[in-house]
Length: 518
Image (cartoon, rainbow, N blue to C red):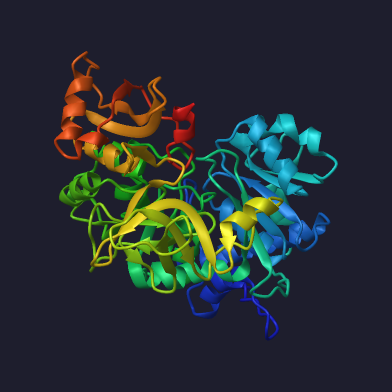
């Protein structure tokens, strides 16, 4: 008998029903929800899997509002576990799969999770800390063929009932957490509500991207990342579209293969990946692609990347800014209002402002601190009261980013507040200097930080990754300095340039500038 959509009493709301069961109720049960490396799954099949997992959790003694840590690759098991937990009123906490043993130890302790679900290829990394947390951790579930003596996810699903009485949560109940990427140091647990997931789709994906059930979406950004969670789960499930999931690392070759084989119509990437693809021999020709739109977030997209991508694919990249705290993009370019080199304009439904040190708005084209307000803001950082107080100011959230707004209303990223430099008494945006370096034909990636040359004065220092085959010849540093001077005010050029084989990054592609400063 086909699985039937679940219902809730009046006044209740559960995010999983809005993303899964609503598709069944509206006749999309047989449409393909997910294509992963192993196969394709309809909305009806995925809903049944989520129901079974919810029942399995309750069978293991899990209760509402307890936490479940997810260390999972991007396969159909991820939405099964994430949405199944939400159906049971249990709080899923997806985390970065590329963390170290020490990191996982910290997150298990911080979250006090009762259950961990881990993809089998990641179990060896996580195993050393599981015994340490036996006091809070009741069960470990392995998604894969061999559970190594622990619970196997597929066995639990097979034994559980295919229907589930959904927990009667409300829109303002805690639904899930996401940990910040750690680009500035220690990750923070951002606590989100049931209402937040669908709000991102209704405010951004549907009106800005124009996503429909006929779209096939592919996100290089992983599901544990706020950007990827929206891209590859919330957005397609909100309209009955198809999400392509990939477990492996998003190399240019792996991404190109999915774009061509799955004929994705929407692609979600990050600036470092766009740069790598444009420099790669694996970049597909335009006639092999079905793309109608692409997006970028995580860091600001250099204008040069956007313009070259458009020439190569015929498809625009809509750059925008979002955050773990706001769940997805709140300032964005859009198809009918696109200006490369900017983040675009605020997404309707969100308010943004640029303020000075006194939290008063600054003038046109003045650099200040970006604050944002909207219905998807997390309610706090878990166990970080003082940081919560400093970040959440009534309806406003301090993003930690520096911005300026042009007279005609386009918002331009200037750098993280901690990364901004004052040279000769004037602000220098590291991102602006990086953008100038990236226009040189020899440069693949660049990161700029402040550096004290020994006289107590801070000046820009650049770390540069060269394109394959480009030697770091002695005169190249001077050539790059002159290249920047020709584009920007002279005081902004990098006084030092260091060539590296790669830049330190988080698993979501953000450059860890704090490591370069160290």
